[in-house]
Structures are given as C-alpha cells and as structure tokens.
Length: 171
Image 1 (cartoon, one colour):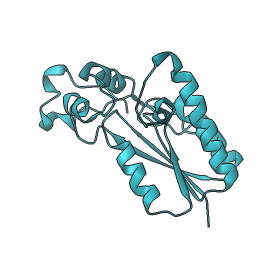
Image 2 (cartoon, helix red, strand yellow; image 1 turned 120 degrees about the horizontal axis):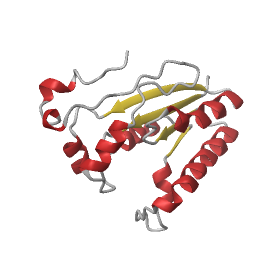
Image 3 (cartoon, rainbow, N blue to C red; image 1 turned 60 degrees about the vertical axis):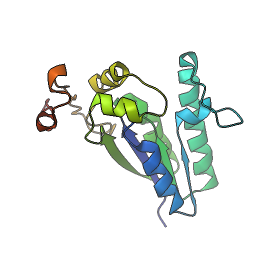
Image 4 (spheres, rainbow, N blue to C red; image 1 turned 90 degrees about the vertical axis):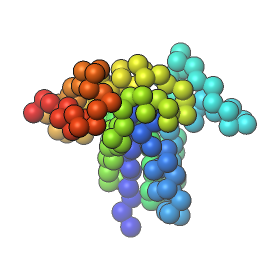
C-alpha cells in the first residue's frame, strides 16, 4: 500500500481537527499531529505561549518524521498552513520517506470570521482570524510557482454570504 501524508489546512475554527480525527478513526495504521498538541499539559489542558510557536512547529515536524520512520500508512498533519513556506518541511519529509501528499484546504468552511471565532476552541478573536485570512496563500504546493493570494472582502461584506464566493482574486 502507498503511504500518504495528508496536510489539512484552514483558518482557525474551520474544522481541521474534526476532519483529522475522522480520518484517523477509520485508518488503523495512521496517526495525526498538530502544533497545538505541543501546548497541551499532562491533563490535556491547552496553554498557548506565542513565544514557543516556532518550537511547537519544530516539534510537530519531528513528530511527523517519527511517524514516517515507524512506517504509518496514513499521517495527518492539521495546522493552519496559511503560507507555502509553512508546508515546505512536510513536503520535504514526504519526499524523503516516499509518502504521497494530499492537501485538504478547508479555508473558512464557508463561515465568517465571527463564526470561526465562536467555533475556535483556542479563543482566537475575529481580528486574529481576519489576520490569518489576509495572509492566506491559495496554493501551498512548493513545486508550483503561481501562488495567488486570497483577497479578503471589505468588513461590511464579511457577514453577507452572497458576496463570499466573489472574494478570491489574484489570477
């Protein structure tokens, strides 16, 4: 069987962890990891520390590498992955350990920043999610040169679902 690395990306609150849990539940020889796991204590209580974010992502990459060395058939990494450079180390690991890569982009799951903020288990504000949205690369595949950016809608359109599908530009 071919080995598969699944990269799930999306804004905070979009459902990355929920999807990762479903994938792992139905694949016996699988594992998942997210940088958020780094901030869990022994009682599974989340204690985020922005000063340790680089350490958390390095840890996440190392955990992915260890799962690849174990030979797990399906590995799911679920982080925001707003920009291409954040995903490159995972593509490199996949190449090194002969894993195919599937990128699943949830983006905003059709939700406004306010809706995402309400769903986000880590308490991000509407503004923080808007900041994520503003940095969003449509394409994170490192071998593709054209990386158009998502252009967010003006604030007065954010909650009007009729306009949301017209907000992608850059082609």
